[in-house]
Each structure stands twice: as structure tokens, then as C-alpha cells.
Image (cartoon, rainbow, N blue to C red; front, side):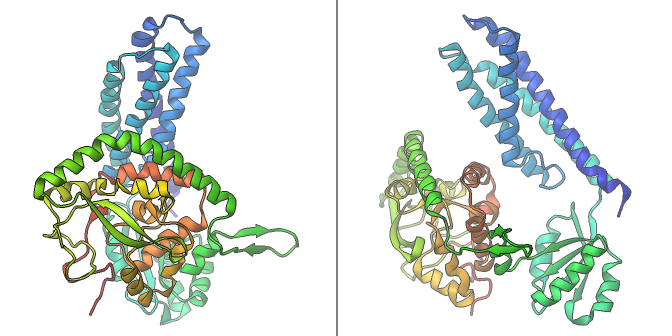
Amino acid sequence: MRKRERYKHLLNLFANFVMLVAETAMFAFIWYKMYVPELEDKFWNRGNWAVIGMYALVLFFFIRTFGGYRIGYLRITDICLSQILGILFANIIEYFQICMIANDYMSASPLLLLTTAEIAVTLPTVFVVRYFYVRLYPPRRMIVIYGEHSPEELISKINSRKDKYNVCATASAYMGYEALYSKILEYEAVVLCDLPASIRNKILKFCYDQNKRTYITPKISDIILNGTERIHLFDTPLMLSRNQGLTIEQRFVKRTMDIVFALLAIVISSPFLLVIAVAIKLYDGGPVFYKQERLTRDRETFQIIKFRSMKVDSEKQGAQLAKKDDDRITPVGKIIRRTHLDELPQIFNILKGEMSFVGPRPERQEIAEKYEEIVPEFRFRLKVKAGLTGYAQVYGKYNTTPYDKLKLDLTYIQTYSAWLDVKLMLMTFKIMFQKENTEGVDEKQTTAIKKES
């Protein structure tokens, strides 16, 4: 293990601390120079410090939630986008706070100036820190150990991050433990790709003993275990898996949040709903909305409402997902699909209780049945209501395979909390600006199953 490896988190922490202090100092300048003189009731010093401290906390919360502090982890474009969104959200919140302090509407110009200045300072800093980070900590040399299935798809995904990972070799798990252990010692990190549990556990224990960083593709059972409750009634540890989805208390909190956020969303998004509806109608005169039967909790069906983004009668040949460069998508549809605005009418499904703001993507029954033929456990997603956004929508893509989609959605179900819902809703704003999340399936596919006959 490289000696300086232990210091890389300190570098990340120090850089983020410096940026937060600089952004807070800029706000303090704006506050004292442009807002305090306009207040009728002036604060004492501690009151001003409280306002500045609150701003630092709000800014830290949003940037951290969007992932803007993960300089050594995310792509540089992701970090920059996260920083920008964090700054924008924090400054919007701060504007309303200043208006409440003044008990009057205040000019937003100083905060617009602050936003511009913060972005102008922060983004170059991120590039400089990332530059030194990559050179101090080059990609780890990795070996991929695989089982019966080819690891090529996973390797392709890992290779998309050449700045962080360097796959140097592959090895079959069936070559024998002695030969495997010898190979593992030659590399800095190990990837265990879809191995039988008995083989994986032995290799994992060896890597643990040798302090080797190990990446593992989890199985469905691993994710279920991740959501278990620890029982300490005896001197033998137990893990309890209730396997019931959300508890009655969690359902109540989730439904309450859905109603409150749905009502707010309808008010805030009403201008967008009107503009999009007019644009769709003017383009080809067809219907504005598109209704379709989808599955939700316990396999119940409901009529999902979306803005129509495709030509009329686009599915006359049967149900199929959108393809890359799909000629069925209208010009208006391309815009609203790329920004996920075609999903806005689903707010009314949420208000009716048919969906939730956060949950697994609602699939069509005929497509879900095809997925279940390949992955029988795909039905596990239906332990909670379908969602407008969700774990798989944020961390996956439109064309994510059913097996990976299941693992993502099951992670959400097994680790559910109200805070996780809030985080995923905020992260949805980020993916609206990431084109790869809306990428369609390949030309020869009708579903997200990679190989079809």
C-alpha cells in the first residue's frame, strides 16, 4: 500500500474546507455591505454571525447532498455540476431567509452577484485540486476475478473511469486458490465479479487478511442482508430480515410527504405544465397527455399520466422502450424527455395515491413479465409503490439491465428512510442535466434486456 494513500482523504477534506470558507466569506461580505445597511432593525454581532453560520450550514448541506465534495470520486463534470446546483439551491434558500429577516422583499441582485462570484472561484479550484489529486493518486492496478459469466460488460464500465481505475488483468475463479492468491498479491485492488458465494467468501477473506482493497458485485441476497436488523439478545449475533417492504409507520410518513410535496409541486410547476401542453398541441394537434397501464405495489395496476413525447400511434407494433435516436420521438418530446419534464403530470398520480415521489420505476405488465422470465426476483421491486424518481433512476440509466435495476431498487427498499427520499428527490435535479441517464436501448432491443432473440 502506498504510504501517501492514507493522506488522500485529508487532501479532499482540506480542499473542501477551503472552498466552503471562501464561499462563506463572500456571503459575509455581501451580507455586511449590501443587506445589513438596508435592515431597519440591525443585528448585534452575534446575530450577524448566526446568519453567516446558517448560510455555511445550508451551503454545506446542498453541496454535500449533490456530491460536490467527492472530488476524488466523481467525474470532474459531475463535481462541477454538483457545486453549481449546491450554490444555486443554497442561495435561493438564503434569499427567502433574508426576506424573512427583513420582513420585506429584498433585492436579489446581491445574491445573483454572489452566485456568479462563488461559481467563478469554486470551479477553477475544483479543477486545480482534481489535477493534483489525480497525479498524487494515479489509478489503482486492478485484477478482475470472474466466475461462469464473462466480465467484459463490467470491465467496460470500469474502463469508462480511466482516471480512477486501471484493469490490468483478469482471472477465472476456477483456476485454483493458490494460483489466484499469488495473482492477487501482484495488484493493488481486486474486483470480484459475479462469483458463487462459497468461492467469493474464501477470496474475500484472503483479501481482507492481506489488506487488499476489494470491489464486489453484490447478489440479491447480499442486498437483502444489507437491510436486516441486528439482534443482540444472545452472545450469538443474529440478523432479522422482515421481508415486508416498508413498515406501517414508514408508509404513513412517506404518504404524508407525498401529499405535501405533490401540492407544492403542482403550484410551482403549473407554468411549465401549461407551456409544455401548448407546445405539444401546436406541434401535431394530437393529445397532450399519454396514459398507459403500469404496475405498482403488490402488482396493482394504474393508469400513469405523462406528457406525450412520441408520435401518435407510436406503439402500434406493440410495447417497446425508446431506442437511441428513436424516430418516433417528436422534437418537443426530445426536449421534455431529456429534461424528464414529460414525467411532470405524474404528480397527479402521486396525489391520488397510485404512485409515490420516490420508488421503483413503474413498468408495463408485459415488459415486467419478460424481465421476470430472465430474472424471477424482478417482482421483489413491487414491495413498495412505484415512484416518479428513485434509486435506479438516479444511479442507473433508462437502459439499465433488469438485473442491475432490481439491485438498485432493492437497495432503496432495504435501506429506506425519509432522508433517503429527500436526497433522491434533490439528486433528481442533477440527473436532469445528465444526458446519459435518458439514453435509450439499442436498435435491436424492445426492452432493457441486453440480448434478445
